[in-house]
Length: 235
Image (tube, rainbow, N blue to C red; front, side):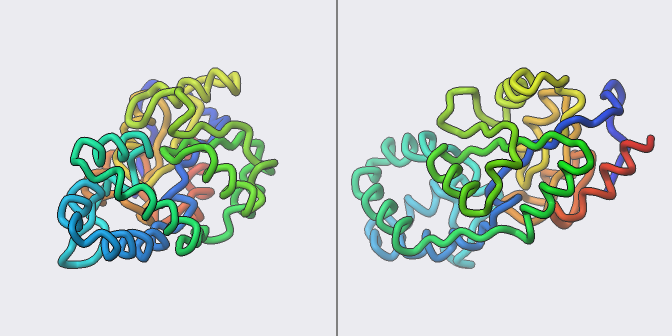
């Protein structure tokens, strides 16, 4: 599904802003991680599942699962309020070290290189903390391809507000209307639209397809976006 950008948006695209988890990295790698945590904390399995967005029947994440879309601080605050944070934290940290193995969704460096060759600036806006985000970007050789990286613990606002995208626009010296926000959840779409950006939703992550249809384009993955950008540039 591709529509023309909404009225009032600049036709010249300068910058593509990517969400990370579920857009560039594969959320499926979080499944064994959370299953392990629930197995280690059976006394809290129901409350953890409810807060983090895990379906105990299907053994999978629900759409827009909090574990996949919220910042670490917000998740910890919810767990603390439920009285399970103290027990959860060491299990989570150990599981991240021993079990979690990050994977990209396709050849992300090639996509970024292709976008750069077309003259686009590339930025990343993620709800994840800076340390794991920097490890991801270093591991997959994205550091030199990115001109801005804004993380959930940076203090520049949170999706779905416009604030972090407006910060990126100011940092890069571009108009928000010249940016495209690319993500897998309704928070990505809502943040982009609140900032006046064009939006692309991808069906590779946490988002419920029914809640991301209001994006300017809905695509199978980020690797289908070049044709859309070409179409918009030609209009």
